[in-house]
Image (cartoon, rainbow, N blue to C red):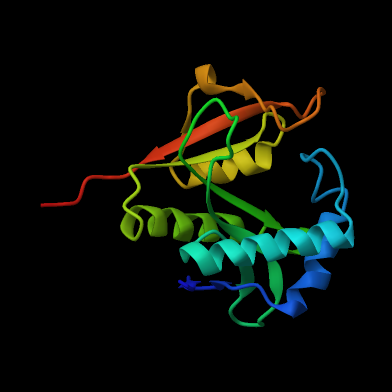
Length: 180
């Protein structure tokens, strides 16, 4: 399994010690503002187990995210194939951080690392990112890492119940040709 490191972060396998903070994040209404609802402890643990299984099977996926200097778990980031039933296909980059980790540039730093991994290690031609149309913070991260949005790609997420969170935006970033 690949562990990724940036100047300030480690993207790594999930640990038992991550489960409490992960469940806390998923029970936080601000962290889950742009998702259909809060998750129970059991749902959070099940998601972490799925994430780890994908990492074990593929060597990449949704990594646990920690601050290098302190070892503190602050959320997750990574890459995952787009779910079936979406109006597009490909590999999606994503992130979710604990509120205390917001505003430090961690999401941008982590997203840059996973996008580079996608292009350099996986040979992807393109990386996608999706969020609720109202999630301007996440869209700002997408723009900071060089992604662009075509409003013609906006869509109604079939996995989200009818309501204000269903309208979603799709951002794209293509691989840059290698220098000759």
